[in-house]
Length: 218
Ligand code: DX5
Ligand code: ZN
Image (tube, rainbow, N blue to C red; front, side):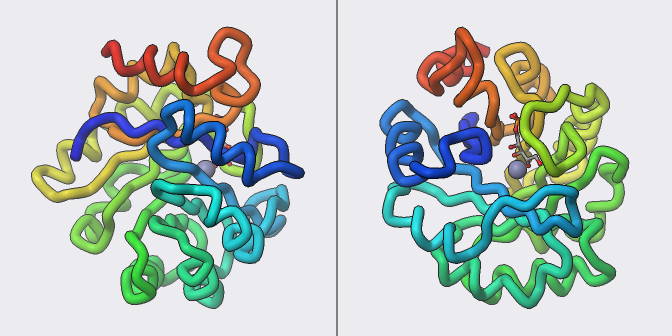
């Protein structure tokens, strides 16, 4: 399914009201709920862990898309799968054995995502394309919402779309996605768009129904 999925990131929402925030964005047309997990080690910020994911799960009807910005990953995969993650995405840069990590994610019953930092080339994913369900192109350095979109992500998306061919692999873009940058990455071949600030804090795009309408006119 190559239709565009809008995945609001609750990192930009009210942390005291995750349940209500998830229900609100789904009611307003979100396709996936993007959940950013940060450990203060792989990235210089701390968010929350599997217990919080389990608590919000009943408030999400659709896909819970969990983005792990943690290292190591492997000791926590089962906990996130048991918390109800549909997609678990790990960073290529998070350890020496990403292939093993991706296998463990699938073995735990979730779809496997591979995230690439802005400095990691598309070609780094070449040997992993049969082992993933999603590749996440980071268009900011991970750790914080509200950063400026890094333009080289557009060419990376196009290259990955070529490399993926007819495999059933989603291309997600994460960071600085808004009504200006969303059409660029969608045209390059992205089919899942994460948006934190643009959905929860943006002026004219404060809610995803406006945001979604914008990118669906591409
Ligand atoms: C960054 C996170 C992103 C972030 C996106 O480390 O992975 O998901 O919340 O936020 P915006 O859309 O504000 O760049
Ligand atoms: Zn993310």
